[in-house]
Length: 409
Image (cartoon, rainbow, N blue to C red; front, side, top):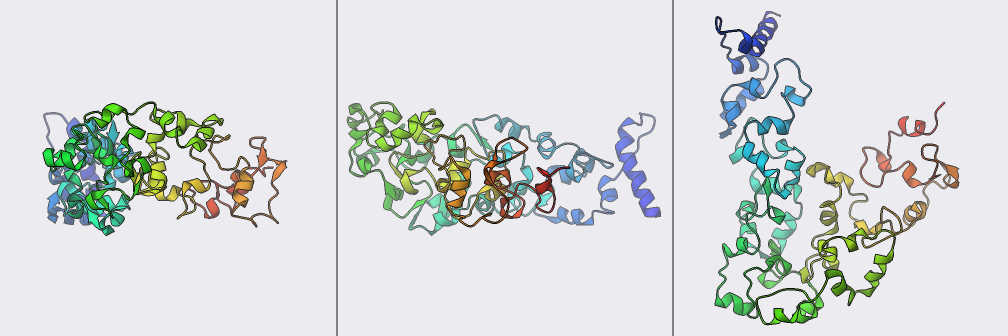
């Protein structure tokens, strides 16, 4: 009991010392007081890399010794606390492309706030840490031809971890970042049919990480590209070298061959086809390792725009029906419903796989009205399409909360 009283008294002194006035100055050994209870934190001082804020011994710079609205008794949110010192990182959050954990304020997803065995107080080695979210790293390393920086697991050779003005969190724009290693000389130009690649997008043809093909060319190639028929999409000036201008608007060029997709543009909801960049927002016009020339696999591609407010390491929880593509339920080019569902009737869509669901249980259909919105009951009245903390993707706890949404006295 005496030890507890001494600790409380010391903590009170920490919080009030600044207001005591010049006539009386009280010096408190904050680590000594805190370590009375947090001896596990004390051991971290022996790590190879100790956070400067922790090494200073001023625990109250980050933590409130009495109470807080934030976890771990932080003075403010994790991100705001970090930005007190790391204003250069704060500036990077204003750039065009911000790493999702940074945008979400998840500093502690990558960094340990006290100490670590890794540089920059990372929780794991850089390659392990990156692979913990970027699951396709394992796939990259298994291919026949791996880009040397990837094989060496040096992600920072090309990328920055917090924010960048370049897409893909690159340190420099493509092709400048590529020419840091690859000489843009006569031999290089000869390999590329004499084109001046000073402003080209190398990633339109080459996979920057790995490939089963030589020269890191992507696995699936657009027929005109594979046949060397650049003039099919590019203006005639492109064939003379220098310019890679296309011969018209992106969607109009694509519709020249893909007239079946053009039909989708007339549907009520067809934002993807009418957005700036249209087809190129999702497809690579030259080559790709994904099916239908998608710029990446569906899971990662769709997540670039959808669920951006979900912490990076929790996004897998929002992938409904693991192992199946998003296009099992959604039509990406257009639909007559706001969710781009493949069938306007939600129940029919779900029943295409779940044939026996609810045949002898909760009534549904046009004659059964949901009292919450006045619309017919369907599968989405009780289930969520993406992510749930409950079994069967239920929207609420089935033991009680789910039923009382409608069945109230």
